[in-house]
Length: 299
Image (cartoon, rainbow, N blue to C red; front, side, top):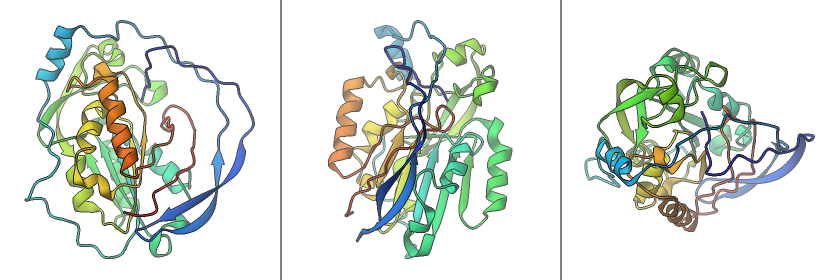
C-alpha cells in the first residue's frame, strides 16, 4: 500500500543490515524478555509522484459527507473478552494477502517465543479488498485455532457499510492504493472502480478480542482511513488494551472525517501518553523495515 507525504519521500542510502538487541515486555506485569531483532538499514526506494493531493474545502466537505458512520468509542452491548490465557495479539488492519502476517510469524515484529504463556499468539486479519479473500482464508485454514480473517471488511471507527475503491493498476506493489477515499491517485488511475463492504470498529474489536494480559500490536496500513480511526481510538477506553501501533501514515485528504494533520498529531500524542508505543513504520508492502518495539510496562 502506498505512502504519501506532503514533501517528496526522502530517499535513503543503501546500507548493511544490522542486528540489534531489543527488550520486549509482554503482558500486564511485563517481565522483561530480551530478543535480537533485525534492524533493516535504510533502503533505496522511490515512489511515483502524485499530483493534486491537497483538497479544497468543498471537496473536503464532500469526503466528510461520505463517512459511513460516526465515531463510536464504546457501547454497553459490546461483550468484553472472557479469555484468561494471555497471548500476543497481532491486529493487521490492511492485511492485503497476508504479507505482514507472514512477517509477524517470521519474528519481524518481535520474537514469538517471547509472547505470554510460552509463546501463545493470535492474529486478526482485516482486509477490505475482495481480491485477497482467498489467501487470507488459506491463512485461517493453516492456523484454524489462532487466525481470524475479516475479508471484504474495512477497518474503521464504527460499523456500517462503505464504498471501497480499488487500485487495479499497481500490480507490482500488491495493489497498495485501494482505499475508502475516491481521490486516492491510484484509485483515480484505476478508473474509480468500487465495491461495497462492511466496516469493522477497531474499538470494539480490541474490547471483544483482547484482555489486559495480552501483548496487543496493531499494524495499520489503510490508505488514509487512519485519519478517521486514530482520533476516535484516542478517546476510546479500548486504547488501554493496546501496547503498540505500527501505522503507515498517508495523505490527510484521504480521510473521510476531514481531520487535519494537527488533529492526527494530537491523537498520537494522546495514545503515547496512554502508553502506546508507535515506531516509525512503513508496511511490509512498501519497505522491509523493522523498528524496535517498546511496549508499556503496565496496562
